[in-house]
Length: 200
Image (cartoon, rainbow, N blue to C red; front, side, top):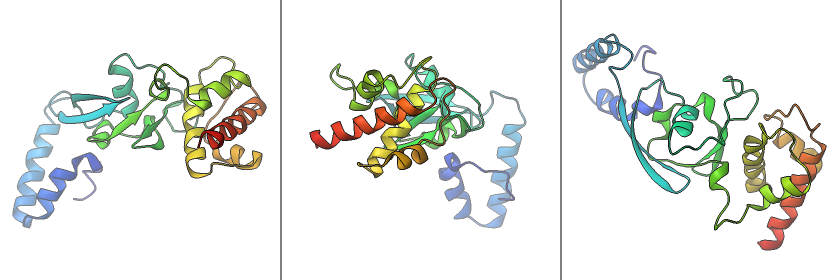
């Protein structure tokens, strides 16, 4: 489509277009371009997402970042906006169980998906072992990076339940902390890994 539709959130439209002939593609393209040119609020797509176990339906602009959708829904503000360039990792969330940086994902890409933020990691009013370990091992100071750091660590332990210190550092290298010097964060992830292995 000449690079003008770049968003997997348009997959339904693209599937319909690609199944049609070139004349139909031209008509659809012209109509969509006309809609885009009408103004910022002219184009919205309905999406349905599950956020921390609760289902939401929203209409979103195709350009809206996932981090803004998350923070605007249900007062969930643990997901931080840090750099907007995927460098700091403060915006890390779990999308269908896999860690992503929500400042570089679009809301429409999350249609039909399940999102878990730091608020959704605990269950039955009991902290997740990673949350407990960060508390016990003083793996935080100001706390701004902590939600993203914990969810990145969750991804690491999902794929490697018994990481070495070097593997922990490597697994968290996409997340920045300006306070702790990382030593206590590594200790916290190591303790959480041991706890999670004991609990099975």
